[in-house]
Every structure is written in C-alpha cells, then in structure tokens.
Amino acid sequence: HHQVQAYLFSQLLLQTFYFGNYLVTSVIFDWGNSFVDPTKRASFSAVKEMVSLILGMIVTLAVGYVMDAFEAADNLEGGFIFCAVAILIFATCDLTCLLLIKNDIKPKTKQETVPMKVVLQNTIGKKGFRNIVILSTLYNIAVYFSVGFLSTYRLNPHELAFSVATVELFNVIGNGARFLISKPFGRYSDRTTFAKGAELGMGLAAISFVLSVFTVPATRYLVILQILLYHMAAAGVGQNMLNITYNYVDMKYFVQASAIKNALGGLCGFGASLLGSALLTAIQNNGNQIFGLPVYGQQLMSLITAALLAVCILFNRKVVQKEKIKIQ
Image (spheres, rainbow, N blue to C red):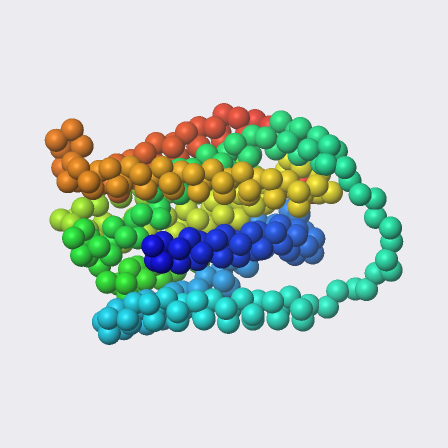
C-alpha cells in the first residue's frame, strides 16, 4: 500500500515537473529563433542539436556505467537517486545560462490581451495548422505506443539481455550518427520544406521499427541497427516538427500554437503508451503467445508502430505538403 502511494506521489511530481517544463519551452524556443534567418532556421536547429548531442553522448555513456555499478552493488535505488541529483544539477545549470543571457531593456508598454477566441481562430481555425496537429499527434501515438517498452526488452535477462552500459553504448553510437546527419538534414529541410524533412525522418523511423519486429534473442544485435536508424530519424523529425509551425501560423500566435500542438500530441502519446502497456501485459500473461504463435509483445508493438508511421508519411505527403506555406 505504501509503495503504491509512493509511486503515485512520484508520478504526480514528475507530471508537475513536465508541466513546468512545457509551460516555458515554446516561449524559449520562439525567443531563440527570433535571432535566426527564417531561410536558415533548419540549419541553425541542426547545429544547436549537434552541440547538445556531443554533451549528451558523454553523459549517457557515463550514466550507463554508473547505473551498472549501482546494480552490481544491489543498490538500484541509489542509482536512481544519483540520476535525480544529476538532473537537478543540469537543470540548475540550464537556468543559470538563461539568467546570464543579456536582453536589450525595452520600455514597458501596455500590451493588448489577445482573446482566446482570436487565438483559436488563428491556430485551430487554420486548416494548415490543424493538419500539422494531426500529423504531430499521429506521430506521437505511433512512437509512444512502443518505444518506451523497447528499453526494458533490451535489458530484460529473459529477453535481449544487454547490460545498461552496453545499451547506452549503442545509444552513443546512434547519437553519433544523428550528429553526422543533422547538418545534411538541416540543409535538406531549408532547401525543400520542414514537412519534407520530417517525412524523410519518419521513413527512417518506420524502417527502424520494422527491424525491431525481427529483433529476438537469436538476432539481438539487430538492435544496434534499429537504434542507429531511430536516432538518425530523430534528426529529421525533431526539429522539423518544431519549426513546421512557422509555415502555417502567424508568428504572433506561434507560442500558443506550439503549446496546443505539444499538449494534444503529448496527451495522445501518453494514452498510446497506456494502450501499449496493456497489450504487452496481455501478451506476457499469455506466455508470450498470440493465437498459439510464439511472439514477444515488443515485436507486435513495433509492427503496429511501423504501420502507424506509414500512415503518418502518407498523410504528410498527401495532405500537409499540399498546403500553402509561409516563410517568416
């Protein structure tokens, strides 16, 4: 009973922190991009991502080895406490960097409050924006349905049975590939459109989940290629799906539009993860079988994700890319 209470409390805290993070993310993103040439926005995003990746690769590998050490000492709880403290330190450094950025001091002026009705008319009321909300939501549903459960699949001693450090090493390799492809992805998106850049990334993601369908203990090293492609896909989807809002919404409403898109996508993605959890539990309770056929739950979940990503690509090409875009 006490463990359930502690778990629920920790989840409440976690969701509160996520709420605080997403409350300011759109504002910071819009503010940072206000200094960037609109025709070079994807290339700038790629460079920014490359800097983050280098540091992330170092931290990821270090955390993997530390978690293995805690697990070997039968002190997994200590490992999680270490991660929580590390996150707090990084968040503090992030806040410090924001506080040190010097803005031009502007005289206070009375700003006109935009009614919610006007905001909705210029966001959800626009067909182009509604389409990218649908695309973003579909993508989140597809990925969140299975991606969170692939980590346990890789680590479970009765499934793929990799150590934490080994999986983190694979992730470092994947981030290295993402680092190398980020700049070409940025140039491609600037030369074409954010929607086409996102489509290319979604295609790589679909292939990675198809590979995951065939990843079983006997072929477990396919996971390296699967992780590699998934990280490369993130270079095409991540920044393009953030920047694409500029193409369909007036900059005056960018923050509100991003908040709407991220909130709907996040909620639907969370719901998809709950459905994925229920499906995985049902398959495992049935002895990892479906209709008498041996199968790991993550294989079926990856197949469903790949199919949903194919729908995303089709919707992107046949609907989103047909809309007239703005360059601003």
